[in-house]
Amino acid sequence: MAGNQGQLGHTQHNRAQQPTSQTHPIRSKKIMDEDHDIDEDEYEFSRNYFLAKESGKSGKKSARKLSEINLVDEQDLRAEVSNIEPKHEKEIASLIDSYKSLYNEWLFELRYGFGLLLYGFGSKKTLIEDFASTALTEYSVIVVNGYLQSINLKQVAMAMAEVLWDQLKLQLRSASGSLPKSQQPFNSRSMDDLIAFLDGPHAPENECFVCLVIHNIDGPGLRDSESQHLLARIAACSHVRVVASIDHVNAPLLWDKKMVHVQFNWCWHHVPTFAPYKVEGVFHPLILAHGSASQSVKTATIVLQSLTPNAQSVFKVLAEHQLTHPDDEGMPIDVLFTSCRERFLVSSLVTLNSHLTEFKDHELVKMRRHSDGQDCLYIPLSKDALEKLVQEISQ
Image 1 (spheres, rainbow, N blue to C red):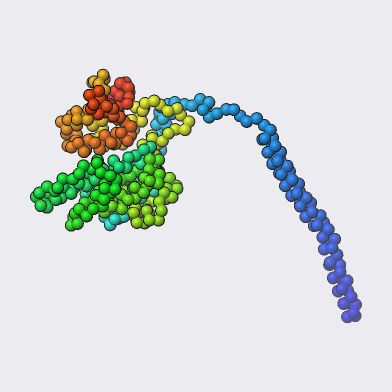
Image 2 (image 1 turned 90 degrees about the vertical axis):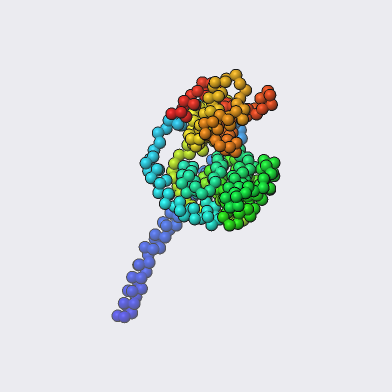
């Protein structure tokens, strides 16, 4: 009986195995079919690839060029862009205001020798200018607009040296009652001499500082290696503090380890503002637009609105002189200085030159030699355009 049970169990075991042996060929066939489909797909892909290559070689290339495209005029394009209604103005203003609580922290870091580097999406120009005007009142501030196409760093170093020298004269006069020894004119000094002066131990007890504010230190005018190394040397000077912004995602690649941690000594602050690059974008060339021969009134208005009211008034003096004397070759610098001083717009030639440097950097004002040998200033705009510009900035 037991043997029968064992035989029965053996028989049942064989029966249980039979379906498996019957379905195995079907599975194998499915796998083979799938492999065959994959091979066909790969073959078809390869065939199409090489056919496309062959047809590309035999086909004729287009003779059309980008220069043949009917491009829109630059002024028209900028006018259309300026008419775009801004969005989320309240939210952007609220976000920028929220960063004001960080001003004390930023000022603390500057006092202890660090440089401030602000990054994040959106223009940080308004934020930095507000920080400079409210928290950096004890410093003399020099502003560099890195978004311009070309920047003369020696002129920047000269302006910083002149401002520092004015501070030292005032401090030494109040301490000893006597004037310090006169300095060699800074415009005749080399870059190394200017950096040495900014780094010199002039006032060990109560040190003076010059704050260098750089909008877009990664801008097109400062993106080369030589400019970055010069800025790093200036930032490492004992009497210099730097506040800068970056916008390019690869901006940190401009610096090596020494520049980041020793010379600039950056403190990184993520401050996205989501504000439009209204001023910065004016100076970037438009790819699909014809360049205009003269600067548009709209562009000049935007730039002037970003400057101080005092700078706008100086520009207005020059513009009014050009409108009332249309046949003149320009306005001599000494005549402009006298007119501005009479209106209490400037107190020294150094102040006027700082305004003129800013105008030249923005290409608002140009200089040419008068027939009598004097250097004269003029605004490269037609009479109608200049009248419209004066009307815009007077509102």
